[in-house]
Length: 206
Image (cartoon, rainbow, N blue to C red):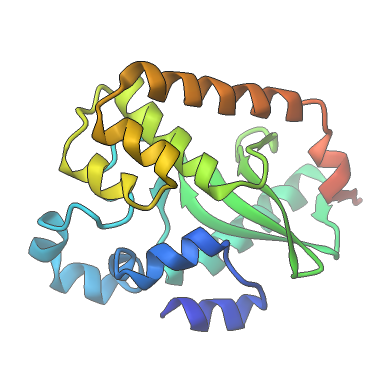
């Protein structure tokens, strides 16, 4: 399944940067298990393969798994007595190692309103704002500061997806500058915590 087919099924447009990265071929491995199984060696040698060599707790979903993850969220919410409001659409795009799900949230299938982490054990929702570039920058900073990844070929290949302000920090191996940007992004995220997303996105059922 390619990105255009996925967008047609979901009736949404992924964020601009996500689509730009896809257009480089970096998400080829996410299009199907068949491609993944037949091209392991190519993938291992491709530093730019999206998030594949980035050591963070954010593992992109294959496009063909997205519908299953949507259904999983609906099932877990139903068990907890919730239902996503009709005007909102959760589009999973990645997972943590523990099974929590990163989603783009659209209102009326047109406006990207949030990037979230859906915590499947608690139904809690963590708000990452709306800026996918900042989200990606933060994940890369986490890889270096929390997961002890060197600023290697994979990190540098991904830095090219980012605006110059961010890219130059990685190319110069400016750890202090990377940390400052990451803290600024985290500060923005903290200001978003006051918004009750369960009330915003869910109806109580049963």
